[in-house]
Length: 270
Image (tube, rainbow, N blue to C red; front, top):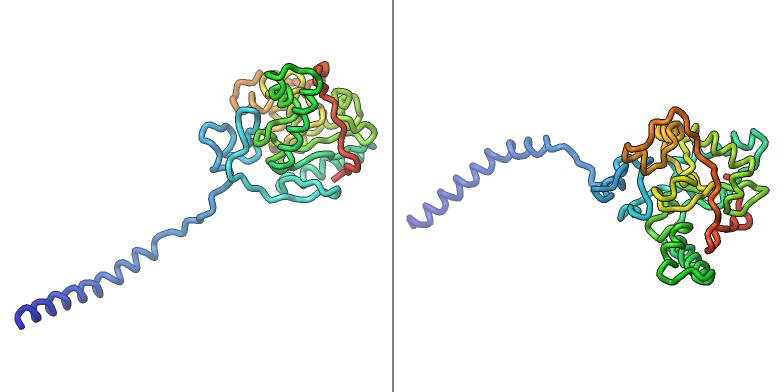
């Protein structure tokens, strides 16, 4: 009986303590702030990847892949192609103003899935191999013109290829069209840059593409246009401090593999 009494006494004391402490515990819990569980896509980027804290400056090139788990919301253009919805309005303004100048720009490529990029790269590898390039150089040469899957800006929804309606071949002749001349001179006003200038191939890892535009935001685009640097230089803060150096349009001769591509038939404006 004494043992049972002691047990009952201890249980009663424990119950009293719980009742006394409960309000304090509940009050403390109520003060804990709510923390969203959704992790922004930019935070999924590797720690050494410059510009990942700002989606507009996401760096994707042969040495920096699309972040694992990167997700975007897409907006669909009138021809069925898609872009990151955050760049749609600026893109629409740019193309509308270009048309008001009497020109006819065509978006022939925009967002691409991993599967699409893989197919394009494999096709380029096959064409380069057929051209007679030594086997040990085939993949590297192909990657100069079609990015390997995971290293293409098209997979971010921030890049697009724009051609002139009257000349829809993706080669260096594109720079001679009135549409490209207008875009090279004005795209920065809308947050876009000519991503792969002719004189920056050693830095970007991609051959000259006078049709490939990338959205970086209006502030960065203005700085890049003013200083004449490429995105890699801009992010590393090692670019030249030129007073004015617009996107260069000096041609590079096509390699033996052939850089000429034709825009898909039926490509349309936004």
